[in-house]
Length: 223
Image (cartoon, rainbow, N blue to C red; front, side, top):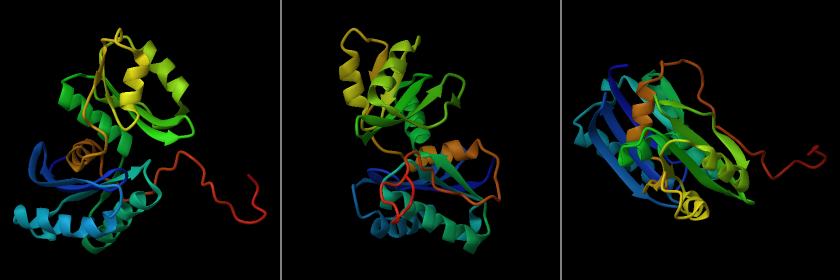
């Protein structure tokens, strides 16, 4: 789809925003951070709009990562972009944070296949793979051991992305020369825009992606 896209990510360990027209990046900001996304996002969006010399009315579409992500970070980007969608009356596309990292790892390494693994604690990882031909698996929450079994079954070279990627490579061992560690540890808004541009615009509300039930429960609520 053509047209200018404003994309943002606040789901994990960074805050980023980009304005893209097709494959061309007109303006871009990326800052690694574990907290402070809410304070950083609006100034970053204003900065890229000013750099691109654009008014918000020039935007054709909006895009945001929907998760999985941190409890607070995941909501910051969604709330901001939902408000912008209502103000501008532009379609908003939600993209998996894992798919964004996998796509970025493919571009960095030049490989057609990548796996994003984000540490979900409790010996579990959030996992999604980018397959040859630009298709991808569904994001899922799996045990680290199960993730390793999946990686060992892959038959073609692949890139690893995400916070659990270094551990996964170490577990595979030096003999696994088909696995390549990328530098990608957090989503990047440029690839949020790239993935969103390949999806049809929708008027449906964008909702957060939760792969694990909330730990906190109301009194008397069944597990």
